[in-house]
Amino acid sequence: MVQLLSCIVVLLLATLGPVAPAAGSEERVEVEDCFAREPVQAYLDRLQRRILKYWRLPDEDFVPDQDVVLRLRVERGGMLVGYELVSWRDRRLAENATVALLLAFPFEAMSRDTACLAGQPILTTLRASP
Image (cartoon, rainbow, N blue to C red):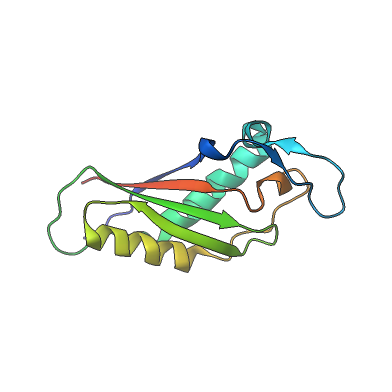
């Protein structure tokens, strides 16, 4: 039986600094302030649920409680503009996480309240548990 797994989206804090203003806006937002906004947290939750919808455990046996970490960037229109595998132990889980990410996009377009997130690195941690 294929199980859906938990997914946690968190900010890559190593890139702190001002976020460029969104098109049509003069507002500059610090990365920490951007990720602290309720609309941004809600957007990340929806993004997380969308990826989770597509991530599946391998059919074969695997060691439980493993993480696969992906770094991704999404542009304001919801298109995935880049991603990379950051860490994993099981190649099959990493492949399935990558497939899930690619099936999940395009994501919803960002509103004015969430536009500060556009292009920012986001770490997505997918945990394989039984």
